[in-house]
Length: 96
Image (cartoon, rainbow, N blue to C red; front, side, top):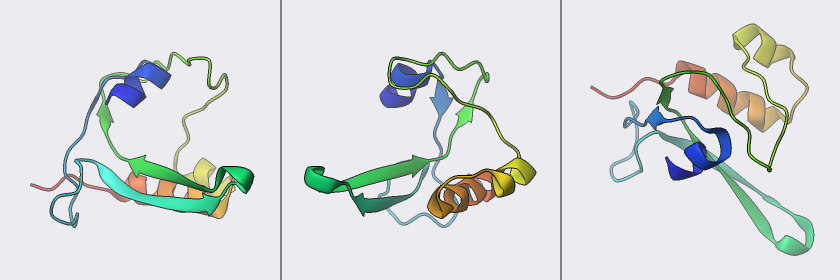
């Protein structure tokens, strides 16, 4: 929650997702890792959350962003794992 608020200005509600393993943080969808040169292994954690509004206030770490729907996500030029996580996030449901 802190990282999301710090980097985007968004406040969110994280719920345990359907099918999540016991003990994983609320909203955790998964992660990917890749070698990042001399820095070693880089890990990206992916969370799903409900946000109160969609007004993003970027911090100094990025300046461009956009919201995409399923159709745009399929067409966007990004690494395949980013698109895969995007589709999984769109389909994710909170456990009841």
